[in-house]
Image (tube, rainbow over all chains, first blue to last red; front, side):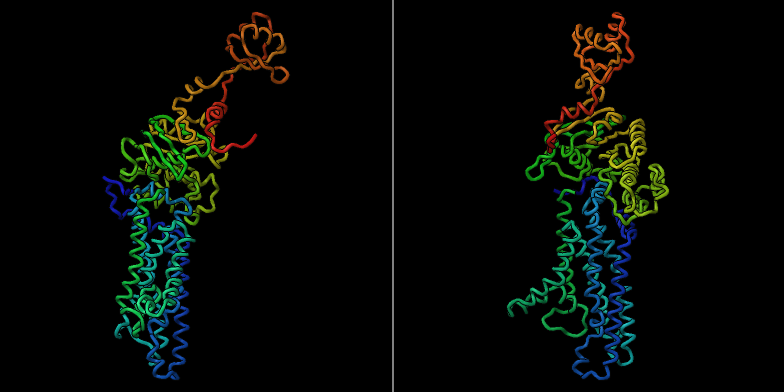
Length: 266
Length: 301
């Protein structure tokens, strides 16, 4: 039973405009982006400073194991949840306040409304992610420059790794917004997001060895780490396949969210 | 015009709306009445396409809500005054609705002024009183200048001035030829505002008629008589078949005779009368009477 009306000509640009107004007119958007930026940059600075100090005394094996792109991004593991909460709230706050009824009676094309929310939030994640991770990269490589472990964007795989890091934040945003629509509750959606990001990989890591080697590479956290690494990882897919594995989580969640949003009563 | 036909909606084991049929016409205020839990909000949500009925239809000017192009131009609704993001300003909230419906942004300031929120347009809605949120919800309903407006319990939380304001607003909207529906569980409020009543209980239609017709049909009229010679007067009235009860020290409550009959009888018998007033049973009393069986939860009195 579809909710998308027939005979309507809602183009979608008005929905994107409306969702953009909603997103930028609440404080939580700025707070979560600011918190994510601070977290990522501070952690990156600290990792880069420590590495630069220790670099002269590190042995060759440690040096080759060090990933100059992935290691400073350690803070992104936590920042992704901050961004994720933002993505969840974009949808779930409308359910918790009852605003969703106003939204859906304003635009009965519910799937288009959800898509507009996802597109606008993802676009913000592209811009904010590029800015945050770009600054993080420049600052941390600056600290590690001049033979202290740093790399430049022109080095093999580096640009790809940084781009995939941005892409991964966008994937988490889409996944989170979809979970918000599926769960229709902030707490429920955040719980599922935590489970997918942190708990499910733990479960996969503790499977019997034969299964573990096949399955753990499908864990979100491991796939994300592989996607942003320039050093080969064990028990993972290539960076490109890994980022596609991550994207699959978001695509499946979004498809389910669109299906349910069209069917359910508001 | 709103046409609800054989509308039925079930939730798990509860049938919230059960074969409901009624029509709401433009140019008058229609009161949509029922006790709490009688299916009013479910019906309104079905009209707005928010809930899919199990059976039956709800049409706005002949079309299902979900097929309307940018529905705010056709129907404005106040469903739940709390339905605002507490961190968003009144203006931003309305601007998002306006943009989504391709309504010019200047309408936002117009409706904010109209509902008296012009001064606090930039303030976060989380700090608004319930009455201010009702006004913001009404501003949203008026945004698209729609020919049909639905207000679900609009006077909740309003102060006396706000209640007067909303009565006046609804009357002027209907005078402009719009279709106005106001739901309420307060019969007394409807008596002052509505021209027409659609009354439901347990999801079924109880009455669909004009307020005056409704009172004539269901109300019993009484006459209050104040007289220093009330015992003698009571005797005269009883002789003519009236039912007479004493109230207070000087007043008689008479059923079965008109004001004219009582005045004439008193004059003919030389009995002084200080006050003579017809009093209709209030809508409230009639409403309680009709819906007694339909009230879902009843407290022991």
